[in-house]
Structures are given as structure tokens and as C-alpha cells.
Image (cartoon, rainbow, N blue to C red; front, side, top):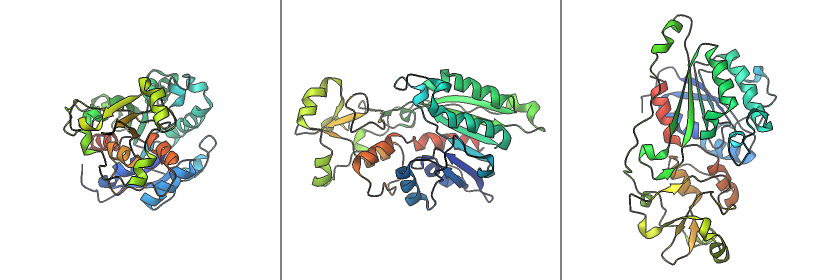
Length: 314
């Protein structure tokens, strides 16, 4: 990480969720001057941890006068238009409207750096092509890289695409091809095991609420991804991506943990936050368990954002 700068970098956090970008930005002298999200629950958690509340304005129709000046934009737009679950409707998906709207504002506001996160399918979408054409024709160098927690020695498979766009002003534009690209870190062997992220001290009340019913375990076990608690110290053990449907969807929504008793339990929201790189003092408030899972499943790997900032701000 870099030291704080004397002049803060002003940043905007669009689709802010619970504030993964703000978590990563704190050591870099970055001042998040505004955040935007329509989830009342995400905004409640964000405000609790960052002492200012995101705007709940509809980004489909927000006016450019309501967007402050900033050096850096962070965006984590809805991934459903580019995923199989969303039938890959791409730019025609209503959930893509707000992102299209913000792309227009990018070239009007011209922040020096734009960072965007999405699923792997985004890289093959018409929206990505439109984004690149729009930014490149307005003086931006655009990089796309794939980052996964395994690259940061974390035992979780959660690959995501990150777009990094940097503006070359009129004086430096002839040198735009010489700007150093963002290069993905080499894949690391897992320095940490799942045992580093499991809370072995869960109280009985919480532990009981995390158990999968025996009827569901018997019915769905063939399609579940399960790791054994007794193998948690094995460096070969990984969990798969936790989605917003974890805890209510029984297939391909995340990994469950088999206890020594043989029962299956869900990873707790705090354990998932730890896997995503959030600080130990980060709080989800007193929200109901299903809401907590939805919020953490929609969040972003803090370590990946930290890596991008360390590179993009040099």
C-alpha cells in the first residue's frame, strides 16, 4: 500500500453496496465525496462503517449536475445482464440502463481514472465494446484484467473482470501507448488456508441458525459444494464464489462446511467478509441473516481493488 497523499484524491463510488471500494481506498489518501446505491440495507451498512450515507438516487435518470467533480470513479454495475442466470441480455437488459447513462457522463466529466468491476461474461458483451469505443475515442487508455482471490493467496475461487481506464490529457496523449498497463499479479500458492477464515468460536445461537436442515442436506447434497471442517488446514481446500442467493438457493451459490458431527452449515456473513478482505471491525449492523447474505454476496474483493489502486495511482 502507498502512503497517504497531502492532497486527497476525490472519488465517486457508484453501485456502492456495503462499501468495498471505500474499504480499499482508506490507505491511499482517497476521499470518497459521494456514493450511490438504491439498496436501503446496503446504504445502512455503508453509513455505519463510513459515517456518510450513499445517495439513493435512481442512476437510470440522475442528472449530471447531481454528480460531483472527482478524480476517480469506481463502478460495480449489475452483473445480471452479462451472466447466464440473467440470460445475457446485455445492453437490452433494463438493468443495464443506468450503466449506459453513466458512460455518457464519463466522457462529459472526464475523471482521470475509471475503475469498473463485473463478471467474466462482461468482457464478451456489447456493453464492453461500447464502453471501450466511447472511452478510447475520448482519450482514455483502457485495460481489462481478470483477478481472483487465489492470486492473493486466499482460498476462494471468485474470478472477476476489472476495467481500468486512465485519461491522457492533450499534453501527454501522444504518449498514451507508453502508459504502463495494469498487469495481473502472478497466481500465488495459497499462503492461507480456510482455517484462517473460519470462526471456531461461534456461539450456539448463531451456529444453530447456520445449519442446513437435514431434509435439505439429504435432498440437495449431490449438487452442493462442500468442504470438511477437518480438512480446513489443507492448502488444497478452496471455497467457490458466494452469491447473493447463498442461504436461500441450494445450487451453485457457494460452499457449505461439513462439521465433525456430519451436519452441514453455511459460512457466516462475517466469515465471507473475511474471505473478501474486509477489516475485522467491519459491521453488518443487526440486519436479518438473509439480508446480510444478500449484501456480502453482492460485494467485491477488497484485495483486488487495493491491487488496482496501488497500480493505477502510481
